Length: 633
Image 1 (cartoon, rainbow, N blue to C red):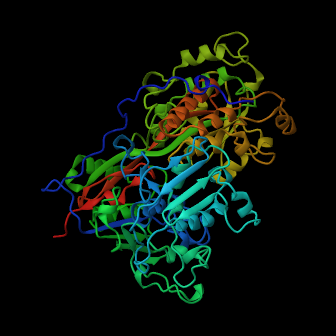
Image 2 (image 1 turned 120 degrees about the horizontal axis):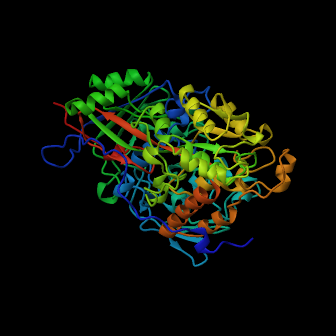
Image 3 (image 1 turned 180 degrees about the vertical axis):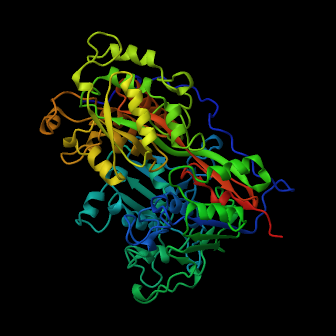
């Protein structure tokens, strides 16, 4: 099949509208009107919920070695990604630590002089580096060069899932051991990096802006070391990171890279699983960094304790806020209410967490193989009630479409093709859709086919009350099901196994990998990436008739959007953003594999010491470089 025509791929995009998110409570301002450039920011990272933090991981959990928490080229969750973007690392391109409405999702030059030059065929991208920018101590006399980015890519690419791996020429040969380098990474001089792709990939700049592309300096005593100072530190480079941002780990200036790697003494300011202290990088020049004001002089992070214990320390004035990105709410509801009632106690800030919650449907299994049934289901669900049961408005707002708003530059902020009064569901509209399906023989708006009886769904970390509410809504249109609560691993194992014949997953949660919708679509709906004989995307979108038959389903032609995804991949800049938004609309109106019901919120309580606050939408956490604190008295 050829590429779809643009008019087919991208439906009309709705105009940008005012944000529906509750406005954040303003933090008190300084007398001078400009944030102070001094002081210590004090943060707490909970140790009771490691999936919400890389810093709090242990050697025994799935997040891997705790020493890699600030290793740019190893697994990063949101907290460590923010620490790298704001503070410890710089990349070719990056983002200003601001929300979407203030331009925080716009790619900007960082260590690159400007946005890249792109060849007419979209396959060659050329970056010119800023000159005269050096690393932090102990390599303060070493200038950042183009080869340093090649080292970063050589180190990280073998560890990236295929769907997140840039299509750089020669990558497969390198990963499979046929080459010691990647032919598509070229450094014709010290300040030029040329990237050659095997296919158009318009989201390449966003991929290169992710913190895993933080440059690696050459080894001071072994210039030929392929991974520079990271050579020999596969598991613990986070303890020896040489910073390029406005901060460095305390004690990193004393690292001596001579001698065998096993004898290197790490920076004292990072005690894995317990604490991390950042200090000003003396090599950093504010005039040469247009993205990071870096107000505070020092950042102290205490790791451990429960969320409730750390919130109490914010009340006591010992911490400025709790820093983690687990499920909402991100502060005790009673603390949120107290701070809103009395701003002298502290501030409350509300922004999109960039996670969507949805009910995912198996499109190959009756009755959800009928689009009208899927539409009826979306119309009957009381989404407002689900948000209330999940914790109320501090935890989320009603989602009208599948893709996160920050990935679409808020183009579809008010788009919701299944909007109902008060988002409480509309039985009349749902019944009208059900009557159009092949599962309502008498047209009364209620499924009367045996396929609507005894369906099985799975869920994880969802309250029984929320699950019961969904089952009650489904019953009003004749769909009778049961929901089995499982731990996350078992739930996804069941959902991704087509032979399990699971009808739906309640509470499917998905957040962004980087600030472009490409990986969002690829991971969830591209059959070439999300569909194999062993594991699927759960919805079975894109499955072939032969695959369906091999799994015991009736062979049929299910929706497939691979060509549409390819078309959007070939776009760049704002045209690509509009293309992804159009594909989001197509999924909602013509496929509906998910019924989104909540865009989660990040509600943060902060101490009254915080006099300037910003939210980094590129990572969906507080922008630590944009935060200022009142001088200690």
